[in-house]
Length: 434
Ligand SMILES: Cc1cc2nc3c(=O)[nH]c(=O)nc-3n(C[C@H](O)[C@H](O)[C@H](O)COP(=O)(O)O)c2cc1C
Image (cartoon, rainbow, N blue to C red):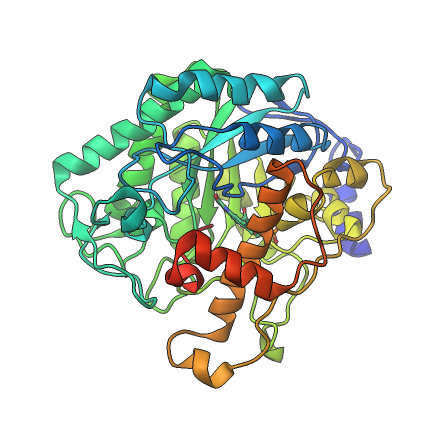
């Protein structure tokens, strides 16, 4: 922790309040409380049935996390439309047909005392047409700049209103099933970010043309959810700080989105960044010395958005690997909550270990192809392939836990490559999830 910034904070505080600790509870604007400052961030499980229903394997995975000592657990992305799913095994909720399974999922977790939020998502142009058997849709007919990405169809005004409604319906079903809140997926290149970015949103109607119209979609989604659920039900968002592409969604626009969502009654803003065209959410390309950065990738942006967030707490996810860095970020007021993605797949109980101080460092293997730069470079960048492989390796760990087995930290990358190809087909290393 930086001594001077700590000292400044103490001196600036009129009451000299003690600095927050990882183990401290956190009250949200809706009145609910997070039991501590560690959040298990969304990790797409891929453990639903072909019709999008939750399974017993999903329940087993959440049993492991129920004892994990987190202050908040967010599910992997749940699709608001089964025709548009990012990957095989996504849970999809468009009405109450899976209510029984969803209730089992939520109630099975409830005894832990940790709030459970459902992450709700529409993949837009990142949907996998082989899963939903529908052509991907997007704000504009602009394909993602990754190999074999299908060119999406442009949404009509009526369809956009219908998707907004779908988010509200999915949230209402989550509430009925016993979830404590929802988190809108507004990061990593999915539909919300496709509306926000001028690169993917070329519309000139009420949904595009300038930053205010580009953010209308996410504002309407949050507003529709808020209108449909009880005031005490939590509504959060995972938002990109930027999409890290020239001419794309900027940090300045992201700050304006936060201000707009605060006015809509958002409860928690989780900061991430990047898309599968520029997968910075999994870390910088460490092969390039110039991009080797500090442990958590988005802390500086988080500090810069404090003014817009006001009393709404901020979470930062991406790269946190030591207790010291997490505690410093929270004590220093850079963020209120620390999000953990990959660590929670390899160490399901890592929340508890960090809070009680029994773990200082989270060791994760570097999962890399490690060869063939020339060959890979012809179709995509090595960093992109490595990110997809890393993601699949962690998905394998989730599937092991769901099958009642322990994570296998020695799992070789090639085994993951074979499994991912069987699971997702030859496009497995074209990124499409997160
Ligand atoms: C297997 C896997 C699945 C993921 N699924 C999601 C998801 O469904 N929704 C989401 O917002 N982020 C998803 N992410 C991104 C993580 O939530 C997190 O932002 C990212 O892994 C960086 O945090 P970390 O360094 O703690 O892993 C996923 C990441 C992995 C590895």
